[in-house]
Image 1 (cartoon, helix red, strand yellow):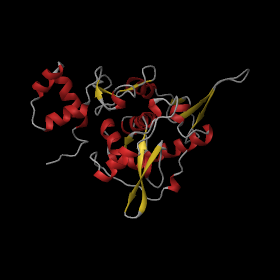
Image 2 (cartoon, rainbow, N blue to C red):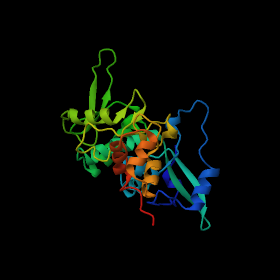
Image 3 (cartoon, rainbow, N blue to C red):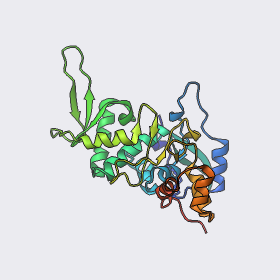
Image 4 (tube, one colour):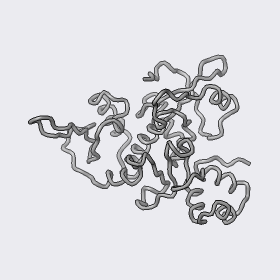
Length: 266
């Protein structure tokens, strides 16, 4: 496990288009898949890329992973040489993105405060001994997050409230949201920019087994960034849709998901 205190100099970029020095470092030092390591656990996403796919602010995601007091723990770091010092690029795995998206939904759809989530996650790590408690343990989403302790023998199943000592009140809407946006059985995630108000639409998807886990149109292998690039180059939406034999609405939805996140380049 990586101790952030060992890495005093992080490179931050809110731009998905990284500089040539970083891209070259990533090309020659990209994470190597270990024997039997699930693809979902390989750290291959930069923070700007992950933020774009999840339709989040890269600044927000950076603060969650690489600030002085991070809420979440990144799976990896890429060391690069910069200005005679060791610098580090935060790298995230698909599982990291899953955990970040759960926090994102709690924060922006269900209005949990950042202060509460910070305390709850710290509490969850202490009680579970896991760096990624939202992934490794059963966590019910209530008025407060609650760690579920399975029953054994005569001991009944119980819930330990995280981040607060109040009695939790179950909020099924949160679990429903996670179920819609993250499919554990299919190992797939359906981020959606408008998830705060739309519990139905799943126009884009991510799966570590499909196109190396990059964002695609749901049910296809069509990368959303390819559609975005063609659109930015001035191609008509109808022509793009016809080329891939998909509906224009699919293209428009995908573009609306990432268009605000990717910087406009003249």
